[in-house]
Image 1 (spheres, rainbow, N blue to C red):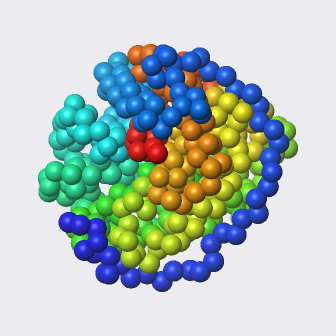
Image 2 (cartoon, rainbow, N blue to C red; image 1 turned 180 degrees about the vertical axis):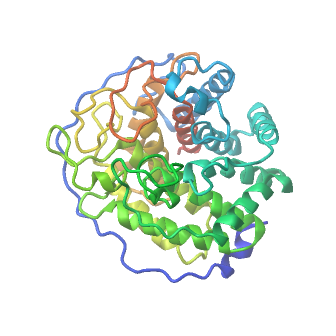
Image 3 (cartoon, rainbow, N blue to C red; image 1 turned 90 degrees about the horizontal axis):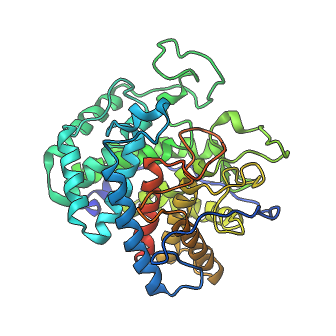
Length: 412
C-alpha cells in the first residue's frame, strides 16, 4: 500500500523544541591512511561525477558479491560473534540486507534481489523472539517489509505484524537509563538493566523504528508508527547533545571523558542514527506531521558531523578525539557518508563544502575496499570507540558501504 494513503491517519501530539546546537570547532584531525583499492575503483575528491557514479556501481557490486559469497565461511569474524553473524535474523547480518535493499533499488541487480527473496523465505519472514522487545531483533523486519513493497508478497510482513501487535498490547514502561552491570531480573535483557525493552541506546534508532514505519505504510494502520515515532523522540531527546550536535551512545556516556579529556561520542553510534534519519524520512508520507522534526534533527546532526571528517576522509571512531583511534573506521564512515550524500542529493545540504566532504568520504571508502570486494577497517561488534585493524571486517560494514554507494550512484 502506498505510504501516502495512510498519512492523514497518523495523528500525533508532538513536543515542540528539538535540540538547538552549539557548533564548535574541533582539534585538528589525525592523519589516517589505508591501502588503496584497485585503480579501477580508487576515487579522489577531484574525480568527476561520472567517475564517482561508475565507482559506486563497481564498489557495490564487488563488495556485495564478496560478502554474500562469504556467508557460509565467516571464519574471519571473531568467534565471540561468529554464530550471531551467521544468523540472518540477527542485526549483524540484517544490516547488510538493509544496504543491499537500497542498492538493489538503484541497480536492479537480479542476483542480489534473488538472494534477498530466498533469505527471507528461508527465514519464514520471522523475527527472533527470545527478546521480543529488543530493537536489534526487529532489524530484519525492514527487509521483509521492503519485499512486500517491492514484490507485493503479503506473506512477508505478517509475522512482524503479529509480533508488533503483541508489543502494542504489552507496552514497556521502563525508563531510558542504561545501567553499568545489573541484572534485569529476568536475565534476558543482557546485563545492563531493563531499559532495552525500549530504545535507550543510539544503535536502536537504526534497528527498529523504520520497521514499524514500513508496517504502517503497508497495512494502512497508523498505530505502528505512532508508537515508533513517540519512542524515537523519547530516545533522541534523551541521547542527543545540544552542545555538540551529536548522539551519546547511551546514558553511561553522558559524563564520560576520553583519555584526552574529550567527551566520548562513538563514531559508529552516531553513524547508526545519522543513517537512520534519511531512511525514515524517505519512508515517511510527505505530509506526516513529524517529517519537519526529522529533517530538523538531520540538519543539526549533519552540521556537527561535517566538522569532524579527518584529513584523509574518514570519521574517527571517537568523534571528538581523533587521537584515540588513529586508524580508519569504515562502518561509521560509511553510514555518515551515506547520510551526508543523501542530504546533498535531496537538497538539504546545498553548500559546496558539504559536497566536497561527501566526495572525500567516498574516496576514503574506495581506498579501503580490497580488489576482491572485501570491506576492511570495520570495527568489530562493540559499543565504544575501540581499536581497528585493516583485516577487521563485518557484514554491517558492507551494509554501510552499500548504503553510501546507493547515494553516490546518483551523484551530480
